Image (cartoon, rainbow, N blue to C red; front, top):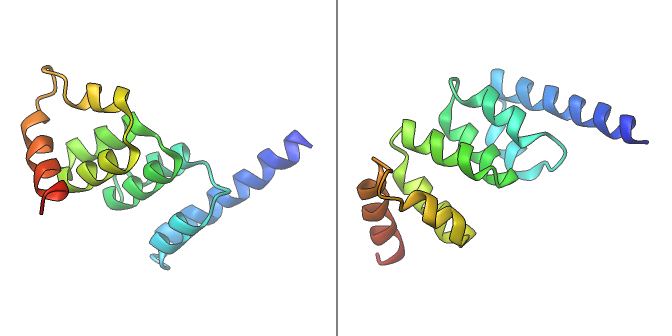
Length: 116
């Protein structure tokens, strides 16, 4: 039974990649489908379209990958929205760490997103 689930996930991962590469409304597929591996598909999307990687990572709550892709692509507003929705203390501690060179940009976006 477990291998059948793994095979099914592989099929949905392949479907996700087809939707992405054919630009056939990939956002809808990634947001509405729960059967693909968000980590694998997110990684696949990183260089193709960071916004799609964000959707996949957000769906799977792949926090560190999401923070990395949003930092690398200056997607601070998207990161701020995710942080506010997740409300995870450890994630906030990580993002607000003094070592985070993106800290100021994230704080600015959290402030403008939370307090419009």
